[in-house]
Every structure is written in structure tokens, then in C-alpha cells.
Image (cartoon, rainbow, N blue to C red; front, side, top):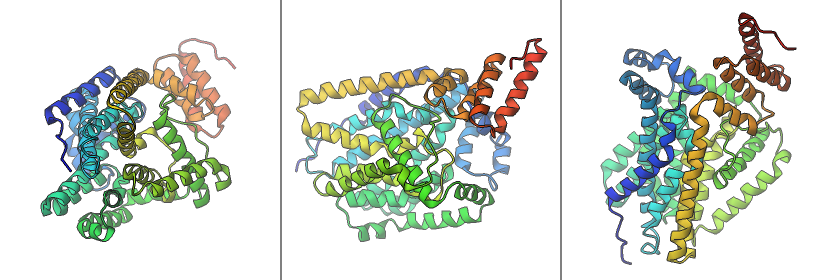
Length: 456
């Protein structure tokens, strides 16, 4: 089998940089939004290095906060935060290229698939479902964690193929530790290594003997989480959120919703109105989708391992962890940032194998142009808090929190009557939402100060 000639690294990086800049340039002037105020603007822990260091023992996600502190102390303002997010996204696109390249090298059709890695990375760079992790500044928790997670996987692959013990036993577990210090959901990393091995023809016993340092890091991290008051409090609140059967039904529905967002990103939503389910009977269609995908994963294991790898990866990232630690927010599109890239790899391979060269180029160009256009359009809603929550209200009209957030955005813009209307709507939908009631009192006070008349 003749090895395919790789694309020049500089050319690949330039294509990826052009894709990221073209699709995200219009977000650079966007302001801080919603959670950005809680974790950055109004969070003293990230405003100086002394404060960051003082909180390192008691806080969570220290490396994420490190990145916020770096941006804040540089004094470049909100544009500095956005530029950092874009650089992280570009680095992740490069890692996706290298990982796709490594996966393709394991396939017997390697020469025919020589352009798949670049196509996969471009699709990743341009896919609009990633805007929440890139355009929304506090979405960095997903993208920065993915940076270390994907770099750790690449380090393991290179250590495995080059028989380099420093990569296998030092750099890989170190990158896993950095991913954990950014976001706790990186705990799936050792299982991701195992999924790669099994889908690339490896044996699980051999693989486990090579990845034991990562399992050791996972055990140490688990012990740390169990001894940390901050993490224990969060886990207790999560465990009380729903019982196991209701949680299974809820997250199967969330899984199906996320796959739809990936496949058809026309209704992207920063705060989707997904119901809390109480039994598996309420999620029969999502359950059927999951079972069908699981069967497909098993059926493709030998003949089309890229499909099996994509499905195994996305299931690993979106389901097991949340079954035991339920989410208050059932699903967010930023979860797809790490979960979705093997789906793009499988799509690229299938298009290459099924179409002739001319049709490949036409379809790839059309797909990339469509995704870039959708990303640019999606980024327009991040130009202000008002536009973000106006868009969200259109897509989640029956969710009280969304109306409250839009009302708050109106209140900040001195649009008091509209703010009052949104707070009243939020209370009609959920009379227990105390934030909306408090905000309604604030709106009434502002109207009275301005000499206006309160409407019933």
C-alpha cells in the first residue's frame, strides 16, 4: 500500500485560518453576554493574578480561569477574549486535521482518502453548531477543554505509532490533567483512547497496558473531586435533579436533539426549551434512535470503522456522564464541540468513497459555503444581549428563563416597558421564578423614576 502524500502543513494552516477568520470576523466586536458577567466581568477571582492564585485551592476549573485572568490583565478588553477564542478554535481545527489524518492512515483506502483530513478540519472550522463554544466568550470552557483533550489523543497516537514512551507516559496524561483542570467532563478521556484503539484494529488488553497513566490520572482526579467541597456541592445538586429512569429519558431526548442540531443547524438555540421527563415511556422515539445508532455502530465495526468510531465517540461524549450527573440545562450546543468532529470525519470519508472526484469537489464546496454562511448569520445574534435573547425567545417562547433574560437585556438598554412585558410573561410561565419577580420590581422602579405610568 502506497502512503498518500500529505498536504503541506503551512497550506493547511492557512486554509484553516482563512476559514475561521471569514466565518467569525463579525463576532469580534460583540460584547460580553449573560454568563460572561458571572464568570468574568463580575468575578474578582479572574481580575488579577494574586486573586487567581488565592482562589486556586477552593475554586473549580483553575486553568479556564487562568485563561480569563490572562485576557483580563492584558487590558485588551472584550476583543482580546474573542481573539483568544478564535485562536483556540483554529488550534482545535488543526488538531482535528492531524487526528483525521492519523485515522485515515489506518485505512486500506488511504491513497483515495488523502484529502479527507483537510475537508474534515474545514467542516469543523465552519460548522455553525460550534458558535456557542466560540462566539460566546464563556463557551470557552468547551473549546479550551477540547484543545487539551484532542492534543492528548494526538500525543497518545504519536507515542503509540513511534514507540515514544515520553509521549505515552508523560505528555498524554499531562494533557489529560490540563483538560480536567479546564472542565470536568474531560473524565471520558481514557475511554476515548480505548475507542480509538478498538476502531483502528487494536486490542483492548494491549491498549490498556499503554494507557495506564491516563487511567491513573482519572483515579487521582476522581479522588480529588470526591474530596472537594465545591465539586461535592455541585454533584449533590445534580443528583437531586432527577431519578435514574427520568434522567435516562431526558438525556436520550437531549441526545436526539443535539444530533438534529448537528445535522440540520437551522434553529441554533443558546437556551433550548427541552422538557424534564419522568419515565422512559416519554422518550420512545429518542430511545429508538439511540438503539438504531448503536446497532449501526456494531454492524459497521469491521467494514466501515469510521462510522463505528464516530458513533462510539459521540455516544461516549453525550450520554454516560450525564446519566449519573444530571444537567440542569439538559443540552447545550457547546457539548457538540468535542463530540461531533468524528461525525464530520465519517461524512468526509463516505462522500469520498461514494462520489467521483468532480462531484466530491462540487459537493464539498457547496457544503463549506453553506456552513460558512450559516455561521456568519448565527454570529449576528451575538452582536448584543438584546439580539441574542430576542432570537432565543423566538425559538423557546414557552421558557420563562428566556423571557426573563430578554427582559434584563431590555432593562439594561433602558427599554423599561418592553422589559416589564418580558418579566410579566416569565412570571406567567413560571410564577416561582423569583429572578423575574425581582426584575419586575426593578423595572417598575425605573418607570416611576422616569415619571412614566405603570401598565397593569
